[in-house]
Every structure is written in structure tokens, then in C-alpha cells.
Length: 221
Image (tube, rainbow, N blue to C red; front, side, top):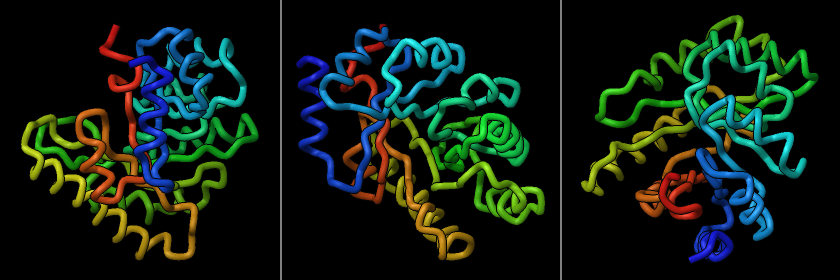
């Protein structure tokens, strides 16, 4: 199937409340433009250098999401235009995003990344660490970032029940934080979970945002 047909397939499949992030990492601008012509507007990149190079060459109404691990010293390169940063995992990173958002007179959406997989990984919060961020006095003064939800990646496994359990855990974390910290904030509404291999389970477990690359653009090239 073509990129256009793949976009159409997802648009026909997805519930209204679920956003599709087309993961365009490693893909040329021509592929992005083909998806754009099919109506796709939200695209995700995981390398600052690639995103900063692509953005000026593509339509200005593209909504860019940064989905990779973000180093603080690189925030400044995407702060002028990025809509949402998915993998926020420290108060130091949040403060830097806010600083660069102030410089650019913008408000940047952020998702707190939780470590839900059983695989070893350096990145992702547990509940205690997330609450430490939200209770931090510095955090409460930041005006140019919005915490709009959570993000997580399940273990890369064929065990669907394990994947389901991990996604369910992320939904539970979201529910707890919504109740305790964001009960009067309708903008805290996103759960970014699910990729090409497990997005159907993710949607069943409450995902509002799926990140699809291979199923739209083909294998990495």
C-alpha cells in the first residue's frame, strides 16, 4: 500500500479521540509531503538535528512532535516551532524547555515519560519521581510549558498480555495524576502509547495518541 493509502487506513480505523502521530524519523521530505497531501498534519521526529533541518523545508502548518530522548543543550534548536515534547523525564529538562519557550514567546506542550516496560532503559519516571517533579516549587512557577499527559513504551515482546498490563499501568498512572494534580485542568488529557506493533492494544487500554512509523512509511531506510 502507498503512504496515502496507509494514512487513509488509519484515519478510517482510529476512534475520534485518538490522534495519529506519523513517525517520519529517517524518512525523506518527499515521504512526509505524500502523507501531508493525504491530510496528515502531526509528525514525529526523534533526532533534534533531523527535525531542525526538515522543519523549514516543509509546510508551516505541520504540527511537530519530538518523540525521542531530548538533551537539555538541544532544546533551543526546536523550541521555536515544536508543538509537543513526548519524553520529558526530569525537572531540569522541564526548566530548560520553559526557558527556551520564554525566549521564543511560546508555550510548549510536554508529556511526562513513564518507564512501564520490563526491559532495562535509562529513561522514564516512576510515580514517586513524577510526583517529585509536580511538587517541586520551581515547577509551580513555570508559565511557558504545559503538562498535557503521559507517554510510555511497552516491552518489545510477542506477549500481548504483558503489553496490555504495561499499557494499563500507564493509564492507571494517568488517572492518579489527573485526580491528584490536574483535576481542574482539562488540558491534561493525553496518553501517548502504542506503535505499529501494539497500537490496537494501546487504544483498548486508553491511548489518545499513537506513534506510527513503519506501518505508514515502510521499513526504515
